[in-house]
Length: 453
Image (cartoon, rainbow, N blue to C red):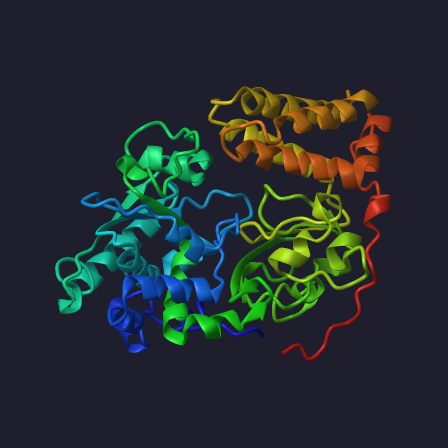
């Protein structure tokens, strides 16, 4: 098992409450941070190599350093807790069971950024977690870790929780800021970037829940020690939401040095595929990242083990690789229909498009309708090329990444499983899903894994 930094205390009864969290060393990182300067905290985060855990993987310390600091203008930290990516639920786990870890990370981060009013923008459907967070904020304030003159440091901070209205588009940081201001959640044109003009046109940093929570162990163990965990530019630990055709779905903390094969088949993690089924494919980073067939998921094109980190998963580009994304790890066994899964995702992105950009507004609908046509037995071979052409015209032609998120699953499905699309078209009368695995997804034999440490 990999070293745990975020979930090490998750098993302790009552850890969501201040008193228990404090007994486990909670808020010691705040006390340590207040003996440092804001610049020193930012440098520790830079040294750690921490990358944004929401999907983009942008270096966190570098993002903080972009924050404009005009004299007399308030600055804000906004935590993106709008976890709406299908297949992703690790932020929910953190907020539900370790709310004080997030709050502690926010206090340190806000102090480093010079923010005195910080916000948690939470997914509207997480109503019960909103109550948990507000209770934890009240506890922290009563203990003197929020409010005026925290720990006699002269630093003031208030944290507010804002519930969204259930729009996936508000996971995009500028749409989130529009919604936070009480407007329709449409993405903004950039530049200016939020670091210059964000919430209420003030300098703002928007970071994911897991990213801000990771600041706590960075301060506790130092950025240099944090950087020793993992490999290359994939430092520290990463939370993975594992689901689909696996024996042990759940949230796992990995150190980004283990192989994809180990993660799927080890009893320490997913525990293999039920009923002895073969692995067909996986979407390793949430619904918006490219699906990868088994042979390319377990090995790179050079025959090396595919590792659970940013660089290895992306190896070879979208032709052979994918993305770490938000860590939503969705496993498909040999009986699953890639075409049907792709249609389900296309329906989701069509429904969640804000409609601001024509390629996304119209293109997502066209992809969904064509996939439905193929699945109901009315498809033609030219529909596959039409799908390819539509996704190509969406990608890179929208204000925000939702267009890309809708296009990539369709492109990857056609790229790796075109024969499956053709099977549906050639067999319009058949309703069975038991058509066998794609020629491009024959899995590399999986050896028995023992004695995983």
